[in-house]
Amino acid sequence: MNAVVRVQNLWKEIGGRWILRDVSFEVMEGEIFSIIGASGSGKTSITKHIVGLWKPTKGKVYVFGKDMESLSSAEIDDLRKDIGYVFQEGALFDSLRVWENVGFYFLEHTNMDERSVREIAKEKLRLVNLGEEVLNLMPSELSGGMKKRVSIARAIATDPKLIIYDEPTSGLDPITSRVIDRLIVDLRERTKTTAIVVTHDMMSAFSISDRILVLRRGEVVDIGTPEEILRSRDPFVREFVSEVREILAGQNKAL
Ligand SMILES: Nc1ncnc2c1ncn2[C@@H]1O[C@H](COP(=O)(O)OP(=O)(O)OP(=O)(O)O)[C@@H](O)[C@H]1O
Ligand SMILES: [Mg+2]
Image (cartoon, rainbow, N blue to C red):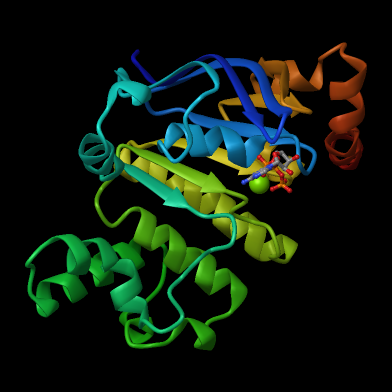
């Protein structure tokens, strides 16, 4: 199996503070890889290096085998077609209709006619279980869960090989959160894309991930399968996953 993302001894300094310290990990093709950690631990910062928005202070980031730092901005733009990014804030364009949001890449970067872009938008919305009745709606007319789905549809519009989800379930109720979880797993099954999921939501991380990275103040504490993370002897990891342990213990008792 190939590594889609390889982060090697990544250090990042901003304003005299080290926000990432010696972070190393690999994400393999087809994997769902989650990054968990407290607020401010550096999760989003890692993803910014993967999409080439930030450059490492020290260390290397390879995406699809390419050293991000060696690429020109035109090459990075090109690479971004293969990376879907679901932003933490959702970040839909408020003044654009749903179909224009989903088809934004094609409207901006190609000469594709409106009908074809609408067709692509319709197809991608179908993948996130939204019907064509939403095509002409404005983001302000959507619920939080629908906005997330539209953001995901936009991220998959160019058929990326890698999707990065930054907090895909934040601000959603538990039921809608589980729907988004299923969607992430479903999309991986249907499109064979690799996924990096940044999340606060422990249940989500433990139910959808092949492997989980635990980050603490910019440092990797542990990387492993959900089972390995649950069995970790590290006191920080144990504390962090205690909520999941309790829920799982409760479920076992109930069975
Ligand atoms: N543009 C920036 N300029 C200065 N400091 C920043 C910047 N972006 C992030 N930081 C700092 O880097 C650290 C890590 O931030 P980051 O956004 O990566 O955390 P996070 O784990 O994604 O948190 P959250 O769960 O709240 O989204 C924080 O201390 C933050 O204040
Ligand atoms: Mg963040």
